[in-house]
Amino acid sequence: MNPVTLLVAVLSLVAGSVEARRRPQTVDVSRFPNTENPFSRTESLAHSMEKPYLDKNFQSRYYDYGGSTFIRGDKYIRLTPDLPDQRGWLMSKIPSMPDNFQIEVEFGIDGQGTSIYGDGMAIWLLNERVTQEGPVFGLRDNFKGTAIFLDTYKNNGPGKVFPYAMIMHGDGQTSYDQAHDGLANEIAGCSVRGLHNGREGNRIRITYVQGKFLSLETDYRGKHKWEKCFETNQVTINKPAFLGFSAQTGELSEYHDIYSIKVYSLDNPPASYAEVDYYLNGNKNAPIHESYSSHSSSSSSSSSSSSSGWGSFFLKTFLFILVVAGGYVGFTLYRAKQRRERDAFYL
Image 1 (cartoon, one colour):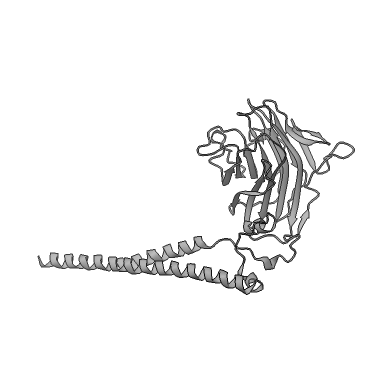
Image 2 (tube, rainbow, N blue to C red; image 1 turned 90 degrees about the vertical axis):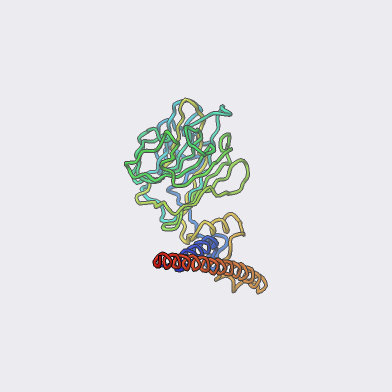
């Protein structure tokens, strides 16, 4: 392949990559006519827990708990008290989750420590029911399934600001990278600095749409506003899936409380996190899908089209200039090479 052809091919690939990055997630509002309940959320009572948590016989029909966990029906499910070397867990008896779902948990992590504390809590979606205590935020290692860790103590996580939230998928054989705070296992994560010393009112929301994405959002520090922690398409929740919670303390301590668990099935699931952000969080900055443009006012539609058209025009013009300039340089180099070879031949 001569230099000109090669250069044009490379520039074409670059142009395609730039165009792909410019394309944001869109919201197709035509799919959600019911704006009050756009995703047709239905609460799964078999997975949810609210006060008083237990029935009149002081039992839960759908959950078991053990280790250091104790339940006060008027206050909380306390996975660990603010004492060293505690491990507690709460595990569903139901071996299935909806295909598409949201989990909203209201919780608190606090203690007498103000600068150093630990160790954190976990939310589990496991392919087998695990009630064996262990070193991974209260449960045993080498699990099979998906876990979200809220790690409040930094061992050796380079480049991370703690507390830190991350997601890991376990295959039943891979150990959690305890020494480096899960660095070898992390699929996605974010800092949740300020999570500690948070009492009732802290919330976390997991949205999972089969074959599309899993997202994690947080609401803490009294903001009363959902903020995205991460979104990934690298996680598949396999069946069976047991929902569980656990926590652990070591030499340092803190309490880990759960105030409520809400699980919803999504019968009309979103196609992307942008649609969650648009409908549930009220963030109207996401671009509207083209199928909605015909229902918008002509002025806003033409304005959007004009803006998009000019942006596309300038990008294509710029790329065209690059291709022409690159072609000229390549052709000049090619001619110089041919001339050198011809001169060498006659010498």
